[in-house]
Image 1 (cartoon, rainbow, N blue to C red):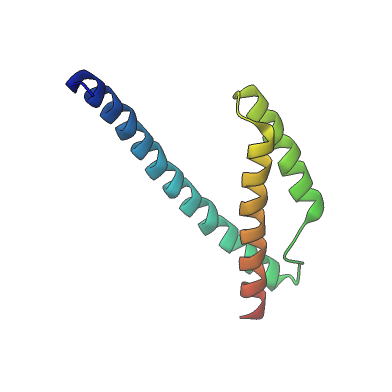
Image 2: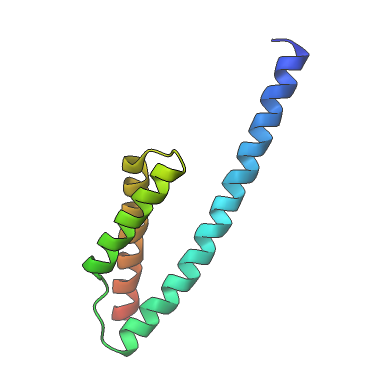
Length: 96
């Protein structure tokens, strides 16, 4: 591998590392807000899950994925993973 190739690969990887860091911070912020939602739901005795809202989010994010040229199936799998974790956290908050 030439030095030019190594340098270009390193440049790409640096960008990927920055994007990964941004994703982690964004997820952290998202979960801080969903924790507040969980506390709110506990206070007002609301269920941990909201299937109608979840389906609207999935539909909305699939459309965003299409416009961003991202695989909508991947975006749905990703948001389902996040939603499952949020619901798990809301159930834990409800028990506390």
